[in-house]
Image 1 (tube, rainbow, N blue to C red):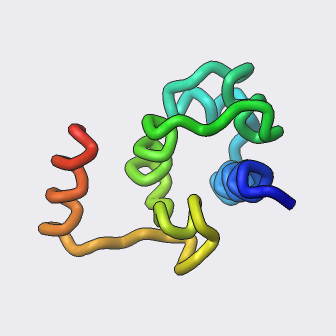
Image 2 (tube, one colour):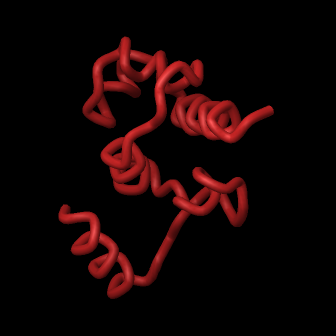
Length: 90
């Protein structure tokens, strides 16, 4: 399995853990349902703005999402979260 397929599988895992169908999940990360479907089926690369939304909305660990390492959840200290938000221009 190639890297984009692995990331797409992890995206689907996040959605399934959220208990949402594609449309409500896509809405929650501010993308269209058709774009989301393309990400989940590895037809399009997942943009950084989607990763930011996953971190913010679902506490997804970026290392887990992109590399498959570490824990699913990302629960940084408050100061670290502020620094990350600033770097992501949130």
